[in-house]
Amino acid sequence: MKLIYPAVFKPFSDGSGGFVVEFPDLPGCVTEGKDLEEAIEMGIDAASGWVLGELEDGEKIPEASDYKEITVSENQMVNMLLLDLDAYAEKYGEKAVRKNLTIPAWLNTFAEKNNINFSKILQDALLTMAQTK
Image (cartoon, rainbow, N blue to C red; front, side, top):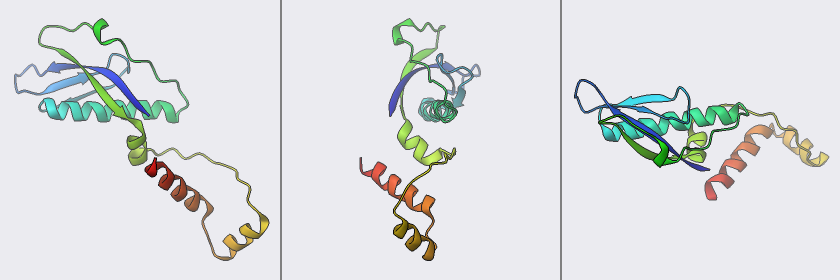
């Protein structure tokens, strides 16, 4: 899943070239970078983490505001940042969900005799499938 959110970039007051990054649609999501490139990278990381946290908690994520409706002060700018939630969740997702499954009895016997970890096999198979899509 890919999402686009507007981010407000506010220059550091000391004139060092760094930026504070805030997301009007993601309450409390704030980060910074020593220059514009790092601020963009940090913004994508912070917003992705914020959204993933909401999704893992079963919360609805907010819709992105219209770029044109965001007002900023002098020297500030708005930029749209692309979040690749699938890639971020694959790398940083932590919440585990318990699933129940049904398999033939003979296959269960085989797996138990061979000390096969059902959860690991299923996770590996699903990750392989996700990476090929």
